[in-house]
Image (cartoon, rainbow, N blue to C red; front, side, top):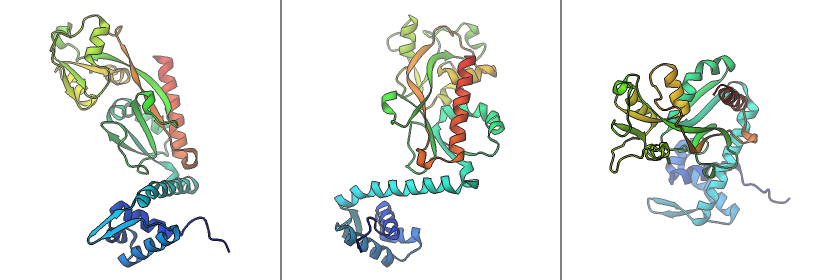
Length: 296
């Protein structure tokens, strides 16, 4: 009988856990096995592969070159198996969705639409996780992603949601309803390609040399400061529309919006890992964006 193409799954699980922890002891605790069982599984895998996967030193464990190269392959295989199982099982598991997105999108685009989402998908169990600076979650810890990045930064499986523009906003009544970006305090989000300098130059009145712009880690902070009358903040259209609709902010120069090179993308799970939740949420996003486009 010819040897199978794959080693036993228990050997691979032991190797992946030991490689992740760089510890047979911690791998044993995670998998509810003894340390000697983990060690034996790894030894058996190494013999089967014909390669050493670990360098074993006194009180130290590290990966060999072969072990480091094999690890992402095994992890991807486990993720593929987990995703396919979730899709097959369905039920409550098929109704849960872990969404990873930036904080501004969650606060200003998704949050105002939660009622419509519940009405459209009352069975969906959504878990929203946010990050400040783009994708930060470990693979396998999220089902669906939405990011604001340049097109060349996104993977081939990303789908365009919408483009954006930039425009200043302030609280109603700020500066006696006569704000001036060359005089009043300016606030912006750090880390974006375009901001006050780009906008003011496009508007025909560049900022003065050395003019101060206070930077915040997210738009959530800078827009909150603007709502509280602390100055002029730069904001994206979908953010400021939500806040203007509730009369928390006004847009003094609506005819001077600056198109942005970054765009919003969604990254659904690959087809083999799709679930009823991921398919329905993707369809809902497309419908919401289409409705926004028609009313813009």
